[in-house]
Image (cartoon, rainbow, N blue to C red; front, side):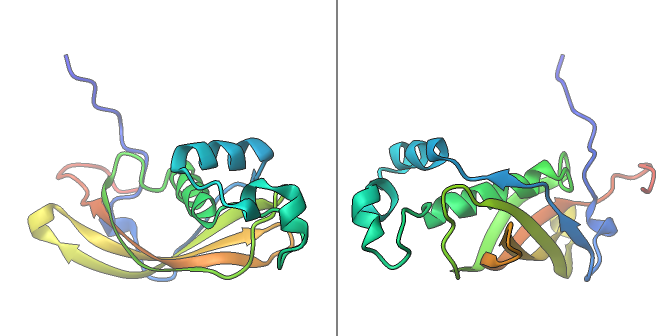
Length: 160
């Protein structure tokens, strides 16, 4: 017997430009940086060597930019807005690392629907999101645009 979870995410028809979703926060730890270095193989001194980093542009170690991006993706998914309704993470249209993420920073993600495009042949549509990673000082440290393919509401499914 197969197990099909109940969708709690939004269907394509429930997205509209201007809709905003805010994630919970996540503090970036030493374990995050060390684990990401091991996973990615990126042992750059700016991330791993405290003495070296003190003479660098930020005066201390910083988290990997791609670690910040990965955490942003996870925080977005944790909101539940596409749980059971996402068909694919289709595209990163842009991504900018505008400020460092420091160890000990707490970040959250702000997602805003920018565009929607129905794709009936895929039984859903493309949702373009403006994404901002914001730290505890209300500074946007990373930002860009993502495109997700989201399922249409099945026939007979109740509207939210």
